[in-house]
Length: 159
Image 1 (cartoon, rainbow, N blue to C red):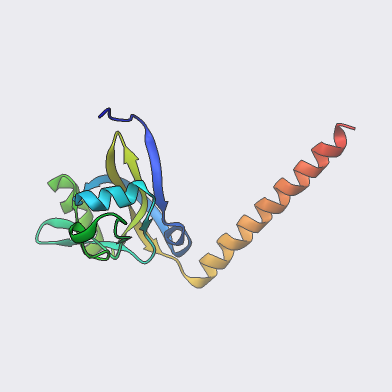
Image 2: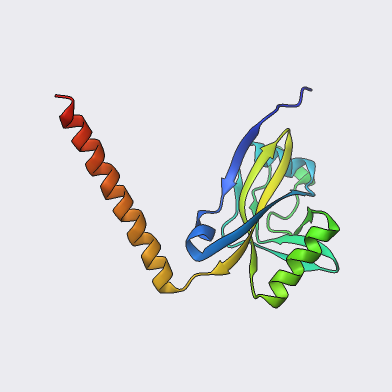
């Protein structure tokens, strides 16, 4: 079987960008069973309300829902189980210290296939207040209105 080069996005956590300011991003692998990988190839992964935690010097992914594989019978595992993330020890220590001292959170922002392997993008995040969320929504709406106006203006300029 040939290994496919490139990146194929499986799932994105848009809610994380709404609820948090993402300061840094890290890429890491994950320990999965065979049926979980097959289910992810079908795009059945949900990152909503998930987070990462450091326990006993290891990074764990908690709250990610990977739907059971349809043809997986007894080999399917619990869809909400905790999964171990694969990172270098120095990175784990760095992230652990930032979460404990600075009060930051580790949130998975993206899940994708890279060179045939499942990878997660983990964001080091600071929580947003309600007024920050309203500001980001207002900025997004303003940008959308500007783009819409520019598009309609350029359409009439061609006539």
